Structure formats: C-alpha cells, structure tokens
Length: 501
Image: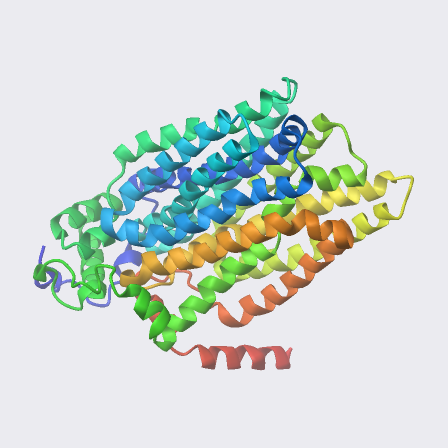
C-alpha cells in the first residue's frame, strides 16, 4: 500500500486515537508477549523461599546467598544489552522465543543442580533469558498497540511479573513440607513449565508492524495493522504515520538504510544525541534506576529474612506472609494498569512514589523498634507486615507498571530497541547491585536503617519524576519527539507551579 493512495484521508485524523475500543486480537497478542515476564516474577517469588532451604542444604554463607540471588539480575544485564540488536535483526517475535528458550535451559540447570557452582551456572543462563524478556515484551506490545490503550497493554508485563511472584509464593508454601534436598530443586525447576508454554504461544503472534516497516515489508505490516485496528481505514492511517516516522519517504522506497536498520543507533544515542534524544535517555534511564534503587526486588527477595529478624521464625508462617504480600501486589498492579490510560502516567507514578516513601519510613520505624525490644510486641510486627504490603502495593501502582510503559514508548522507532535495552540494562545492573549488597548493608546499619535509606532514595526519585518526566497519555509513538523538544520550558513551569503553591 503506497502512502499516496491513502493521503485522501483527513490529514488531521489521528490514526491511533481513532479506535478507542479494545481490539481483542491486540489484547491476545499483548497477553502472549507479556507472559514472558512471568519468568522473572516466578524466580523472585520462589527464590525468596527456596533460598532458605538452599542455604540449609548446600551449607552456604549469607554472602554466597547474596551472590546467588544477584547473579540472575547481573546476567540479565547482558541479555538486556544484546536484546536491542537481536530484536532489530531477527524481529521482536523471535526474540521472545529466544528469551523463553534461554530461560528454559537455565531453569533445567537450576532444577538439576548438585552443587553451588552448578546452581550459579543455571541462574546465569536464566538471567540472560530474563534480560531478553524484560526488554522485548513491552517494546513488542507498544509497537502493536493503539495509543489510547497502550498504557494498559504495555503495563501487562508488570501484571505478569506480579502474577509470577504470587505463583512462586504459593509453590513455596505447597512444597515446603518436602525434604530440603528436594523441595528447592522442584521450586526452581518448575519455572521451565511457563517457558515451554511461552515458546509455543508465540506461534499465534504476528510480527511487530513497526519492525516490518523498518524491514520494508509493507504488505505484511498492513495485514498486521488491519488485525490490530478498529477498522481498515484506521489501519491505513496507522501505516502512513509509521512509514513517515521510519523514512520520511513513501513506503514504496523499500527497506531502511543501514542507520535505520539498527547500525549507528548506539552512536546517535550515546555519542551525538540531539537534545530531545538526550532528554529521552535521562528520563528512561532515570525511571529504571529508581525502580530498582527503591529496593523493591530486594525487599521481596529477602522478605523472609526481614520477618525472621522481626520475630517470625516458622517457615510456613513466613510463606503465608509472602502470599498475603503477593495478593496485595497483584491487586494493585492490575488496578493501576486498568487506569493508566485514564489518569495518565505521571499522577499514578507520583502517587505510588509518595506512598512508598511513607511505607518505607514506617517499615524502618517498626524495624528499629523491634531491634531494640526484647519482647517483640505484636503491634510492631503488624506494622512491619502492613508497611511491607503497602510498599509493594504503592510500587505496583506507580513504578512497577509505569517503568515498562515509559521505557518502551518514548524513543523514536529507529532507536526504540537500543534505547529500551540500554535503559533496562541499567535496571538490571542496579537490581543486581542492590540484591547482592542488601543483606551486607543491612547487617552494618540494621534493617531499620536500610529502610530509612530507601525512603530517602525515593524522595529524590519523586522529585526527579516531577521535573523530568512529561505525560505521554494518549500520544502516538510517532508524537513522542515533540514532548521532549523543549523540556527546559516545562521544568521552569513546574518550578513556578511549586512557588505558587
């Protein structure tokens, strides 16, 4: 389909805003792509309980526990970095398959592990698969979705991370009665099951229409857009916008040049970025940095350790607390995803971060009281449990879903894969560092002190989000560049708003 053939349409019509209904085929594809994220969620959830038995069965130290937990996050950094180039080369769809297959190998290695080093190798391989999955799921969904539903659909990865987390907690509880040399291997090995399902499910998914346009496959892109749009007219208009953004030329000119095909994108991002691109990078890297610097993953990984210090020592009781926390997290992430396209990214992000500051401060206060009390009063333990549930719930309202949405939608098409992979690589690096140092730092300054530090970090993060992240609700992917053109004026306006309050 040539652009000239569809220019008789109203040029003021916004193609992606035309269809506000939820296209069922798009939803199914987004769900299938997002199921990749179950892999990370399940690992976080199941590892929080499995590590108690691994430490007992393999006779490892707390430092070795930190390294074991953090290894998956560190190696996911390599998967995230490689995913941009890989997805530009083989396509978004087959990158999802690659992520699932890599994690499958890692899961089998973990389930069959006979030693600490064997287990480390399995987590390293699984980590690479997680890195691929975390980048590709939101990017694929963003490129497939209409603007008016993109917030909900691209936040589905966080919904599935949380669902995987809850499944991991339930598996911990269900298998906790087995011998310690068997239960943790089953807990980790069972993660191979969703990996197989994801690999098979991709068969029903189309390729990203924007990737097809980048490769010059206009007729295939048109067919995908027809299936994911409210009408054929909308599909034609979406194709026109995507083609203009990709080439600034009629789509009949064929495949993109070398630069647009992915090579040279890193140079444009890091060596000679324009002001809008630099602002996009700051926003994407910043939100991914604070997502993990908030300590959410570490709080979830080491929640049993935190509650053991608070006075709960029975493993079954610890797992029950985890399940309660998982249910709270699941409920709020789905609620947030449902309202992202109604209220916007910024309000939910700022609300979530403000709530995390209060929750972490409350957790720090409760932990400090328990540290200096020999009686372990029930009210202080209840405060800690409530504060942990509130912390993960507010994370699920703001940083959890909004990070994936924002990282996948703000970059221009030619830089989207590399830009997203760079931002998510920062995410995984910070997650690895926090996971590998959380217990060590907590032993030095106590759990209470650690939670006060995390509360302070979230204060800084909230200020950063207020000044540097513009609202993207309702904008097409091709309109994002305009939001970052003159950010200096927007920051000055926000400073003025604060002075007038």
